Image (tube, rainbow, N blue to C red; front, side, top):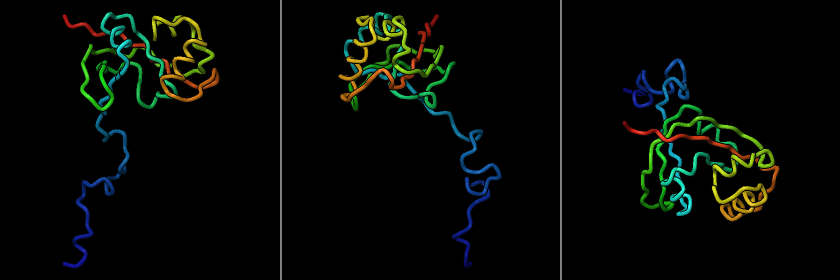
Length: 145
């Protein structure tokens, strides 16, 4: 019949009353905290890292209460599962507002903001200053009993 090929089944996203982007219909995505540095891998294995500070606003990806795997390994290569974690807190702030404690919990070898900014410059291979926004993600290991 003419025009039959153009008809969509009643359950297709374009014909649903709530529309194609209704968040109630969306499956939850899987996220992980991934780390690529061998130094960070060691800190995670010895449970010395409880915060990760990511450049930019990552609140669309990470939220308080999420359960996520913590992984280490090479970019585009195999990864090792270190532990599962729960996200305790997510904050967005300028780098200038980071506390020494947050910096230390991200990288136990750093204490001062200028050291941390230099670390980020090397990591991201670009100029970074105190006004740049970062997301501070606090996480706790989930231990199996």
